[in-house]
Image (cartoon, rainbow, N blue to C red; front, side, top):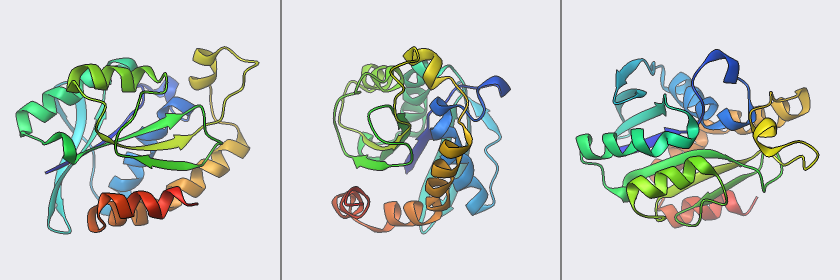
Length: 186
């Protein structure tokens, strides 16, 4: 069983913010598959489905992003999910807006949501898709990541969103190394 998690903050006030890129991607995956992420369990909204002969859970933790690991570990334990079958989708300040980087392990890069996941999973070796949101050094980091996307940023993020069906299909059909190579070369 695969657990695909989009990171973000719950609530209307956080919609279309840089930190909610993970939620946006999960919503697009659900739209592509004509499912609703509307079941509640363990502090998260999720849906469970079968796609391409794979059982998948799409999850949007409903605690603040910095506490995402608390929710994720409950799903891992309840559904008996192998760490190797987890894919986390998050924003990344250190990459240009709209750029994608796929990794199978690494540090949190200062992302507090990823730090919390590492704490609760007790490992840095989990798969992730990082989506660039750039970094405006003139604005406090917290205010920047919680700020709304401007029109230029929305357009760049929408280019990523358009690729979601292909990203999902590639994730499920390619080896992870080939999956990384396909997207990290761009």
